[in-house]
Length: 195
Length: 195
DNA sequence: TTGCCATGAGAACGTTCGTTCTCTACTATA
DNA sequence: TATAGTAGAGAACGAACGTTCTCATGGCAA
Image 1 (cartoon, rainbow over the protein chains, first blue to last red):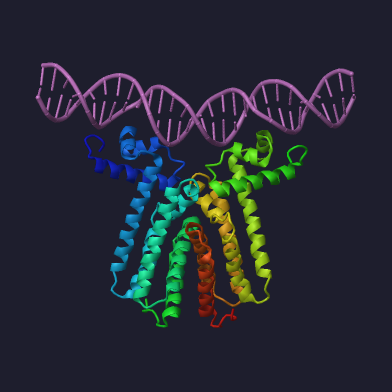
Image 2 (cartoon, chains in turn orange, green, blue, cyan):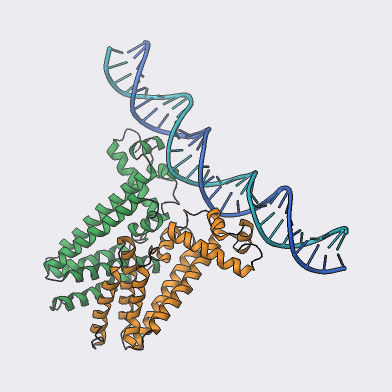
């Protein structure tokens, strides 16, 4: 993998390796040497592509952002019904929570660990959360819901992530989905499709 | 403060100093020397009372747990109406979010940063969250709500904490309270008292 | 007073970290 | 073939960490 790899290949491999390590053990607990070992590229190459550890963290968060957007978009596209598309967010969470290495929202974790010391990390996390809020607000708008409903659904999704992480159980996704159904019905006045 | 203080006084001062530092900058970013400087006790004294940094972190979390329980109980006692007592959780959050140094839930932050490397920290965080769930479930039981409602309200509270921390705005508390009102009405069938 | 244990202030230890440097090997152009 | 530039492997650096040790000071029992 290491020898003869293009810069783009090396970039991807390094970011993916760092992501796995950072997400599993926390950023501060992972040395650059561990990243080097897992990625299979020498430190020199890593530092040429990412001048500092902070740059690598930002790249990891950017990758997570894209994966999140892709995953949630794909889950939404599975259904044609607008309300189901909105609720698909919680089905996506349910699948995620069941993964063996699920350890909560990487952005929330990064913010708690590094947000106070790194403006760039704080901004990246804020932007990801704002992007998710815009996504939900858009879906809510399509079903004629109020802006307040979108904010409420976002809280449920965020709470489900931390609760699932700490409790170690995926059931928070179902709880959030049920609450979302109630809130949507109350806001739009129309009963949701029977599951 | 340092000279001639009893062990209990020293304990409290050290835990309080560590709490402020850990909460503001993250645990790993704060050296024991910073705790010593802020608390005003020599390292020797600190290490006699807390044999390791992990012990100090646990003590900080225990203190936070007590403060949380006290604060939320006091907020609930301000009203006699059972539903208002339940909603008081979100008023308590609103006050907290408006504090200058609010930086999210210390337990969630600690779990993200240390949970994977310290079983004791992970257990302390889990216990605090379980305790909060029992508290909410108890209040929900008093108004004749279903157990599922309690779980839903907890998600709102958790989501509000992370959202308020990351967005830097306290408005998540109001959003969560509004959602909670809707969920309570839907679950119990009785309209909440007009605010 | 004399000896003794606890205390305070801070130096010191060993480790780990992020980052840089050294040295060898190779590839590619003339 | 000769040579310049780059890549790889890993040592090395300075700083910071958690933790322990040194040593001077001071109260207290005999």
